[in-house]
Image (cartoon, rainbow, N blue to C red):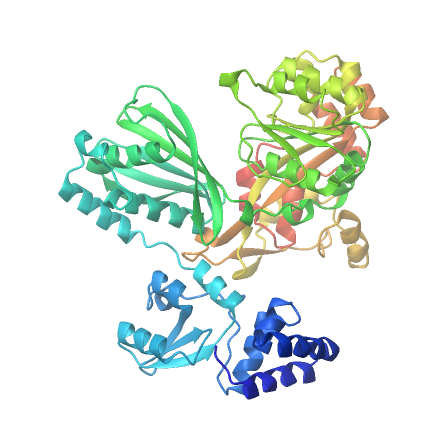
Amino acid sequence: MLLTKELQDKVVSLLVEDGLVDANLVKRTYAEVAKSGQPILAVLKSKHVATDDCIQHATAIVTNVPYVDLRRCRFNKEALLKIPQEVAQRSKVIPLKEEDGQLFIAMLDTTNVQRTDYISTLTKMPLRQMMTSEAGIENALMQYVADLKDVNKAAKASEAEGSGEDEVQTITQDSPISKALSSILEYAAKSKASDIHIEPLEHSLVIRMRIDGVLRQTMELPKSIEAALVSRIKIMARLKIDEHRIPQDGQFAVVVNKNTIDLRIATSPVVWGEQVVIRLLDKSGTSMEVEKMGMTGRALADVVEGIGKPNGMILTSGPTGSGKSTTLYALIKRIKNETINIVTLEDPVEYKMDGVNQIQINTDAGLTFASGLRSILRQDPDVVMVGEIRDGETANLAVQAALTGHLVFSTLHTNSAAGIMPRLLDMGIEPFLIASTLNTVIGQRLVRRVAERRDSYQSSDMETQMLREVVGGLLPKSPAEVALVSEKLGYGNLPPADSQSFTLVKGIDTEETPGGYKGRAGLYETISVDEDIQKLIVAHATSGDIMRVARMKGAVTMRQDGMLKALTGITTVDEVNRVASDLA
């Protein structure tokens, strides 16, 4: 915004009066401005003396323009569509609402008459201007969801052009198919989908997306565009477009809202054509802190103790897609510093971390987990992360690394934390080696979080009975013990065990929060391998026996963790039952 020197000075004075900037810093900045001739507000912002939000708000007050803080707002999709996303992004103008025949808009520069006239002409409505900040504009732009109607338009255009095998070889970036694929990928990224399934049926092509761990059908496309769409994906992933008989794997990256998202592509021949599954890896949307991921109380204490030791193994287990790798990244981030050498072996390298030497497995070139582990042990590592222990050779090398003074992180596919020990025995590892190297084992699964818009209700008789059976022994015995027990377990205020019913929550089902859920949290159980657990391992005890002793020592199971999270409003009883009904 172009302001006169007089107005800029008024903005600075207001910032100082409100205590939002330091007066001495402002004086020094004015001295620099006198030499450089730059606008004072631009210099204050570039030197981080004042934030953009503070400057914009003060400017709005001085120029007598209403100000709106959009940094945490949720926007109505119909209102956003008043101005196309491309125009909103280019012009930094966000439509807010329509009222009394006028369109309320938020923008950075309310003095830009040409831009205002253009928006008025485009929307065919008189405008009411409000001012906001750059961060507010970015938050609004993030909530534009790709319009999947564009995919249907592109599909019809592709049908009109013809979409046989002859055309597949000449697909261009501007073709209808490319635009359709871009819209699908953008919609998936903004919906926080983890996977896209493109599935051919006999007479159509179905697009399904896994959002918060649950697959949902997003759209159905005409069968005629299947060959062109699959070929476009193969071209971008550098796969063979004329190979339809065997599975292929590839990867490429896209940029959505300034965030780079890595895509892993897997194609496979099926009865009615060729299926494509796209895994989306978006580092920007992932918390790398175990506390924010849902680990708390005894589980967190066990893990912190385990990673604090100079050597040994920390193993995490769970089904595919349960967040095991993310947990390992969070633990590595927690211990990472310039005094230790951290080396990882991954397939694939999902998130790139500064200060960590990450190695991508390449089986075609002979670089496997086992061969790579042999190599990195000669690279003077302090900490080693093996993406997954898949066989006895890798397991044996990981144990040897832990025995020789290294801290080893890895994952296993078992149903629970206690199942890790029998699994290692099954891989041929001697029980005394397992007992002497394991520090902490972690079992985990993911549940959907209840959305912010929610209702509370009292548990039914069946829910009340279930909660008492699963977590009754952990809950406070009386209201007087609520604070003490809640703090000890690391959860919010837990209700007394003898409550007639329990207050639970459920989210409101909307297009943005299907089923009333938004985002995911982890369910965790941990076992700290002490002397008693070591004796059980050496005696070839079952996973049930190991978990029984761990619970006597205060361990909380995944199912108990889930029910405690339901009681504190993080998730629902139904969601815990969906994910962990097979667990004790």
